[in-house]
Length: 513
Image 1 (tube, rainbow, N blue to C red):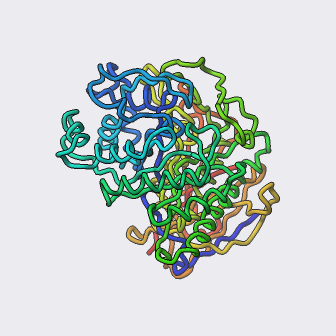
Image 2: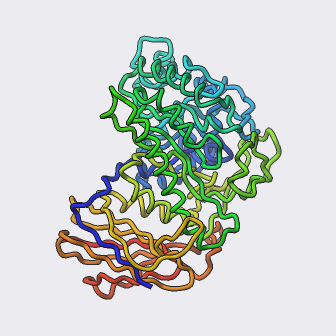
Image 3: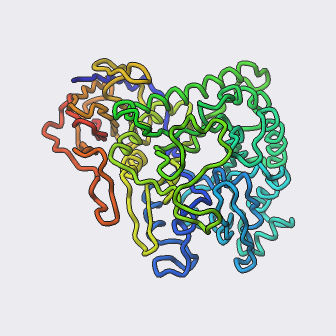
């Protein structure tokens, strides 16, 4: 089998924004408590932040981290999480039927984000929360001093404002499961008024409208068109979410689910183009996509047979925890090699849509459907999906080139698609090319033929491959490196035909003269 990808540096998809490689953490399970924050432990620092987690997050070189939700945010009062910890009250967390201790809040998150070198992206509660509370949160975080909320931040030990730039106007508000769920018309009105007040406090902030989350919902895309007709002048991004589930469709279809994400992104892009065409005053304004939740999620801990079951669902029934526990160990997905290959394919598709997608957050970062898992003894585990994401973050920076593709194809539930899916990033400053390639044929090796026009002489310096004979293999605390990338031998630096192992995800690094 052979696929040919031809590139010319004159034909670009777009430049990769650093925020494309971002993540998300929510007050859910052990994402915060036991993940970021684990006080009074010898493996945590004086603020209660896990030192091992800080190191790994720094190494990922993330753009932003979205916080505090997620479903959690739609019933969260941010004021419960500020001030002396001894005075913070425990509250019912309705989204995940847990008890929230409020020992970690906006100040703690911003302090942690600064330590790990990432920019916060904060979601406000537009479900049960008020537009005034959203504006007050911006005041608390971004106003220098001289008002009640900014002076309270100073009193709480944070003299300098956080100057948070990115703000999400709610979360998945079209879903029946969301606290404060509303119609598109209701959301558009509330989000518009929140946007006005938040920008009255700080006109420099960037706002993310809450767009259609999932294709199976009856409001899909119509929601986007409805809200953006109202919100186009007020926001800078529209969000969408995408999870890919292995529900027994077979390896080929699961590995091909990058195509589903591709269609999903293009649908959102088309909706934006439609709304923009109706604008008169704002026709030159470009709204970008914020894919602020994406991952493989097999719902190992939720009674859900497939993603279509989300339609009409009002609550999530968990299998591993009773109701009203404090930060229970829920949604701690155990990822396989097959899951990791699929995540790698999704990352390739994000690169190939970089003209539309400016922010993308792998959901989530720690313990909850996450690349990194921790235990209560101070151990940290890199799950299989960590590796493609880390390699994408490391090498997926520069200009994505537009390919011309020919060669072997396969039939899938998403249509006829290439056996090899690939993306190429040109880092002109470093004179390097980085090629990401997924061979979704789990039975046969395949050859990737690369043709680079007007790029000068190229030399293959490294071939990183992620593969194995057991697609269900998983990393565990007992065997943490069972599934890790390896380096294939580069026999000919001038080779343009590269063999990709069956069922593999690959990074090919070239020097360019």
